[in-house]
Length: 321
Image (tube, rainbow, N blue to C red; front, side, top):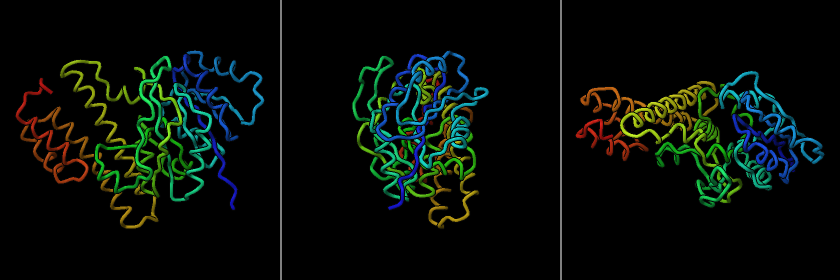
């Protein structure tokens, strides 16, 4: 039997001083010995001092390193830097506001070790509030195996939850750098392009829900009325264009792809671009200009239902959106 792949657990933080100690303790409690890199994205909020206190006197089985970016770079560039510095073949991501359960790394790494085709694996999670109280148990899971066809037929531009991810380091180091704000859709599409994704049905971490979650920022509903609708749509369409561009860069970089995988990867990139185009048309353009992207959406698998629902908005004033 070949030796099991090496693993690096990345504890990634930005302005998480109130929760980082619990996140680090969860990392140190992992049952599989591994490299742990705790990295703060230049928060300037004292998070590093909190981590130093937690690590003081640590003598457990893990190799632990604390670092910070030279300046704030955002999540995707932060991951690029960490992938370059990590020694593990598998990267397990942990946010500084979540808490990994002790067997999380071991169970995710086992899935990747058991099947070379699996490039990325996530899990269900337990949603908790800012104070750590349970909101919902064992949620946000996806099917055991996910590929390009599932992503197309599923629609809703689905992704494995970024907070739950473990993936092969080559998804970052062997492909163009991640560029954008949100990483989970990009990594899911990269993994499906090269192989497949998996999902463990068991909750392996406590996923903290609060106002500073990146996903909640993108889909923020706190601003009422049309102004809130427009803000949310512009953030989402910008994110979808970043995801489409990432998939296009990966398609150009990977020469050894079957014609089927290449065609499906290109269709997934088009899916994201078309979704962004439809959202932008509804915001900015006269209604007669909605028809072309809406028609394309009606003929695109994965977007037919959304496009039909949007067609009804042709009859409504924008202030009602």
